[in-house]
Image: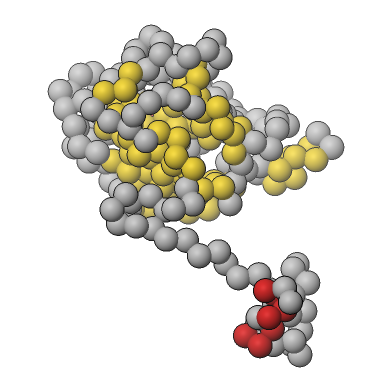
Length: 242
Ligand code: MG
């Protein structure tokens, strides 16, 4: 007997049928959510796809050349090497839960957009801004955690320069059909455990000094990290496809 049928006793079959799934309300045969463990030791869920484990650039490429990524691995961190360009993952994904940690240099250099600037480009197109915004104001839609050029974050919980910050990002990819946008990308962002965006639809791929506009693209894309010329470091990068 299939597991689903064996679970029938867990619920009901004499209740109305839900419109989208075809299951009854409280249906015992509806597939069980998978069991996931989140061991405290590694702080990575056991079904996560690890993109950077602190040891190698395997799985990353230069965005510019498609060849080897030219950033450094030092002290368990993935480090921007200014001038070498953005890097991107070989793995591609759409809807996902993404986690990554970043740190700007302890020694403060520059101001505004010129201080600890990097960025997380989901599907290679949609930037969640990274910036050392600790006592460092800039235009609101360029704040750390901003959907760059579109939406400022609801809050700025950035830690002091030299301290680690953690992003948790829930990403819903845009859907296209017949060359048209059917539903926009939607993102929820937490920085250091504080909500910065709550189910925010995006206006389109990130643009600088221009309005965003959707163009159809494949349903999966790489994670891109930005070289904006600043010595930003990353660690503990993983995602769970949803
Ligand atoms: Mg940036």
